[in-house]
Length: 149
Image (tube, rainbow, N blue to C red; front, side, top):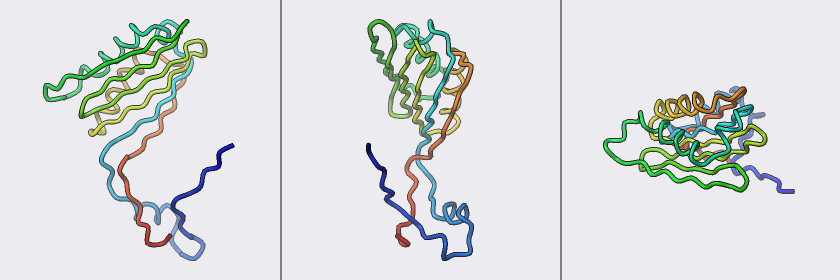
């Protein structure tokens, strides 16, 4: 079993500030949005086939303002079913991995533009039609001050 070791610790017992204040004041602005998305109870047919996932990736990226830059889409079909797919260029990276037998898809969306990350998510969600969805947003590129470590 792997054990995670924290690379940054702040001793908050010796300060009067709340934890949220300490962390908020230590974080600089990130340079890309990363959405980690889990979708459950999606129809088998939309998750099982590489051609379907390819179409979903094309449609999800079609509304983006890419300045004429073409998006590269690749999908891999697992046997007997399931797909891994990517759609990317210099502005956005979308990754999807499906487990149709479980009605599940894991999706990562990296985007320079926060709103575009969510626009892609909404298009994918509309096509996969999951019963449940969990989204975690990370602002990649945030730096924590290490002076108190």
